[in-house]
Amino acid sequence: MTDRNSLSRYKKDDNGVLWIWNYVANARLKAGYKIKTLLHYEQSPFQEISIVDTKGFGKMLILDGTPQISTNEGFIYNEMISHIPIVTHPDPKKVAMIGGGDCGPAREAMKYAGIEQIDVVEIDQRVTEVCRMWLTPSSYYENDQRFHMIHRDGLDWIQENKGSYDVLIIDRPDPAGPGAKLFKPDFYQYVYDCLTNDGVVAFQSGSPYYNISTLKNTVKNLRDLFPIVRPYLVSIPIFPCGIWSFTIASKKWDPLQADLNKLQHKDTQYIDPEIFLASFVLPKYVKNIVDEGTP
Amino acid sequence: MTDRNSLSRYKKDDNGVLWIWNYVANARLKAGYKIKTLLHYEQSPFQEISIVDTKGFGKMLILDGTPQISTNEGFIYNEMISHIPIVTHPDPKKVAMIGGGDCGPAREAMKYAGIEQIDVVEIDQRVTEVCRMWLTPSSYYENDQRFHMIHRDGLDWIQENKGSYDVLIIDRPDPAGPGAKLFKPDFYQYVYDCLTNDGVVAFQSGSPYYNISTLKNTVKNLRDLFPIVRPYLVSIPIFPCGIWSFTIASKKWDPLQADLNKLQHKDTQYIDPEIFLASFVLPKYVKNIVDEGTP
Image (cartoon, rainbow over all chains, first blue to last red; front, side, top):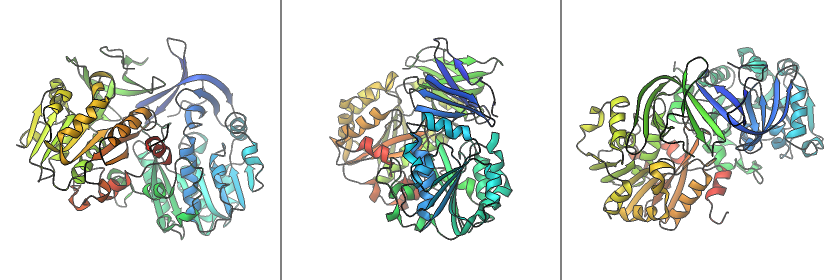
């Protein structure tokens, strides 16, 4: 699906304006974003990394031609993948993110004073360095002594850290490219084993409109392991079709029973206690995808 | 913004495959939909009307190059613009839709046995005829004696029907093309006057991400007239950015106090009582758009 390792997704139109093209849903849908400036382009050992400045979304990180996050609406993804699992656990001390080298979810985790350790496991050091250069000032998070950047393959790292973490955030990319192994059934067992006895994890689990099998398989694999599995939804403008899912899996704590007084939402732009709960209410067509027993 | 009255939005790619292109957010974003077959194309007195069969969305109605509704996900728009105002009113007898010549919201209204009259006011008779030919079998709704199709300009019609309707559904298109007059301040007064003393109305009010002024102005104009004004949100995959708003305005009845036992959701695909309420929970960045006093 991904047209990797090439500049073919960048095209000038008849007026000489540069566009970046995202092909989704088995190339049934193309989304083009008008570029003001191509700020950065490189081929890392793992993927094509670029930073573009756009009119509609601000600065945007693009990996292998797929927009990942933007300065104008990145708060939606970053807040919703991080605050919900953190607040679901009553007293998290150790938190780790797999993926998310832009460190957006890590910055949200830093808002919780009780957290003692925040580890970000990102396979591609260049993603971190490029994001640090173009998207966020390093001082914003690097002065936080709880923060540790680990440049390792998440699949290797997680197998070496059993029973260690109260909260995991699986900020995996599409099931194409270097993130594909983070969608395999074995991976869910490693995640389970990496958590403490009352650990909580949140997964990026695809669009319920055009990645139906990603959401369905994520929920199914997690239900085989965890007593509490709850998908939740968010609208992310940078992603074509907008609607997107995350899935919480938990050994003991139910997000719907979480103490929402703990939610650190003073300077958030998306989440507050009401949205925390409303995001778990699924439209009927999404319930049909995740309900057990449906084909 | 709209490149009207032309075939310029249809383009073949290098492989000879036809695409339809939607330009949004002042042409900062383009969305292309892969077409299997161009089923219908005409220029009506009001606009360019086409029906395409796509791989990602099924059959799609396109007006002046802008996708309006599709067979695969049209249930989202149709259910959410109609059930919410209808259920907000405790006993609606007369309901009218302005716009929506595809009759999708009218079909949802027919699920309510208490409704005695359903009038659809659509300026462009050809939209109705084309949708009847390609999208929905006519028998599905034309045998319902409560249903009346009125081919008039909604702005003229509404000024002639004061104090008449319990529920209005303003299924207006973008504020470009023939629907522009349905966004002018005077129109909101006509809507108020057309409602009974305890009437309820729902408006299509744009994307809170890239039509911020549409949502903001709709809410502001309605708050000058109605005691109860509540925007609500939905994710519509056919619309780029996905997130979309409707706004309820009501003279007496609060949707958050509605009797949800009345909701006819046995054969819906999106709405149920939980989603009815959750759709009124706004992310903080949307609250900032609609809160009074913000610039």
